[in-house]
Each structure stands twice: as C-alpha cells, then as structure tokens.
Length: 286
Ligand SMILES: Nc1ncnc2c1ncn2[C@@H]1O[C@H](COP(=O)(O)OP(=O)(O)OP(=O)(O)O)[C@@H](O)[C@H]1O
Ligand SMILES: [Mg+2]
Image (cartoon, rainbow, N blue to C red):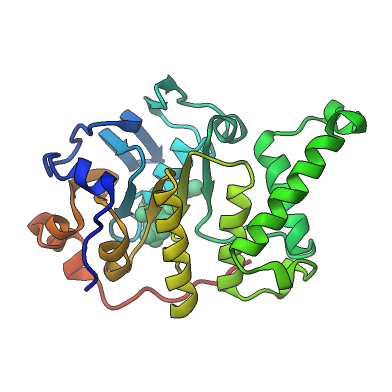
C-alpha cells in the first residue's frame, strides 16, 4: 500500500482528533446540521463537518451511505431539508450551483455528463459558461463576451494539453473512452479556476493506467493549493492520495481520520471495509 501523504496539509491535519465532526486548523468548508430525506429515508444527516483548506479529503462509505446526496447539497444541485454551511467563510447554504462555482466550488458527477455530440473543446468551453450561469441577455451582447470567449479558448487549450487530450480536441465526446471522459470532466471543472473541487467517484470505471494518471493530477492540483474532496471506493487509491478520510454510513459521519487511522478504525471496518467485495462494477457512462 502506498505511503501516506507528506503534504503540508497532511502535517496540519496530523494534530486533529480522529473523531466525527473534528475541528480543522483552517477549514474551507464548514457544514452544520445538514439533512436531506427522501420520503421516510434519512439520506443525509450530518451534524458537523469541516474540510481542511489545501487538503485532499476522501469521502468513503457503503453504497447508499449518502455521499452523492451530500455532494449534491453542498454544491447546490439539491436542496437540503435543513442545515447551514459556509465556504471560505461565507454562508453559502442553498445557493445554486452556478453561484457556488463563481465563488470557487465546483463538482464533477459520478456519471459523466460530457455532451456526446459536442467536441472535446466545445465541452470545455461550455463548462466555463455553464458554471458562470450565463444569462440570455449577456448571450445576446456578443461584444461584451468576445474577450471572455478568447480567454476561455486559451484556458481550454491549456487544459487539453495538461490532461493529454489535445489530440482529441475535435473528437466528439461520445467517441471517448470512459476514462477519457472522466479526464474531460475534470478538465471542464477546472475551466473556472476553482479553489475547491468536489469529485464524485472520479476513478470509477477507469482503467488502472488512466486512474493512476487521474490520481496524479489530483495530487498535483492539491500541491498547487487547490482543496479537493473526492468520493472513492478503492481503499488503495484513498490511502495513496488523501490527507484525511471521512466515512459516511446511513447519512452520518461515523468516523474521520488520517488514511492510516481510518483503515483500522473498527466502526469503519464494521460498516464498510469488512463488507467490501473487491472493486465495485465498472459503471456505464452516458
Ligand atoms: N432522488 C432520490 N430519490 C429517492 N431516494 C434517493 C434519491 N437520491 C438518493 N436516494 C437514496 O438516498 C440514499 C443515499 O444515496 P446516495 O446516492 O447519496 O448514496 P452514495 O453514498 O452516493 O452511494 P453509492 O456509493 O452507491 O454512489 C440511498 O438510499 C438512495 O437510494
Ligand atoms: Mg454516489
């Protein structure tokens, strides 16, 4: 199993108590009393959660634990039943996704959302406008956004190169492999230069070589100062990449700690690790 992270964020977290809801030295996101129910099912009921700035936090937990639902709430893609949360010191609970993206928090999806009939480059350019919540009147005033469009083009070209997708610039996203689509989605999230990335199973269904490259990109982004929170089922990937691990079960944070502490935490082993049967099946990307 790979060694634990030596990043400054890992050092900062080494003094944090390994318990649910633990306070962090410099949290970028602080959530309180966040709930979401579907009928009688309490999908999310998180008392308190802090995510350390500049760190990679892995969110783990069994299928149906509420990981995606929590992501949806925190990133403005779903409305919480109750709760408040702050991002970078400002209250952002219930803000829509595009406004959160403007503030620097961007997410990717468990099932990739690349638009099959658009080219790779067009997907990236669209990413920038989607996240900005572009308005109709602005779209009609071309001179206002022509400069921005040129900036987006430059940024898109940079990202294509960084993720080694430049040779696929003009390919339709629908022709890409599942792994390449995951890379495209990560690149698209980066179009707006976020300060925090929320990645829902970025490695699922990706071949091992591409998964390794995705991991390296995530670590590199963290080393450049970005905060990352990602959902992952593969514990080797969690151990090798994350500075901190949060385990969710039945909507609640049941444990938090360094990867090493979490791998031997009896509650985590009981709720999750003990029940894992190899890697989950590769998913279909649409
Ligand atoms: N839109 C919805 N309507 C009804 N129930 C939902 C909805 N979305 C999620 N749920 C339920 O909420 C619970 C949490 O689901 P969620 O998708 O957040 O889990 P998860 O931890 O992301 O699981 P996985 O590891 O399988 O992706 C599950 O029981 C799920 O069936
Ligand atoms: Mg999920």
